[in-house]
Image 1 (cartoon, rainbow, N blue to C red):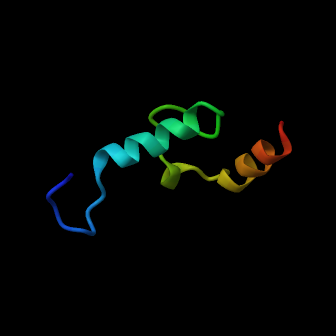
Image 2 (image 1 turned 90 degrees about the horizontal axis):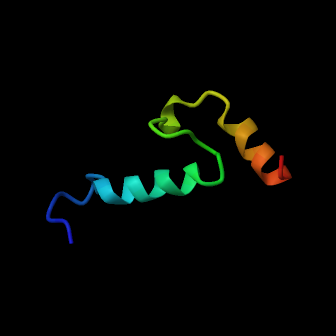
Length: 50
């Protein structure tokens, strides 16, 4: 368990969340969600199975 402030993100949880988006192709490696301008379109394409 981490021993930090409760509002500080835990790095390994962020790494897991990002890895889960790489496999289905929602994000590319080294890309971060706050850098994506077409996130809504990617979500819609993923949901449509494109």
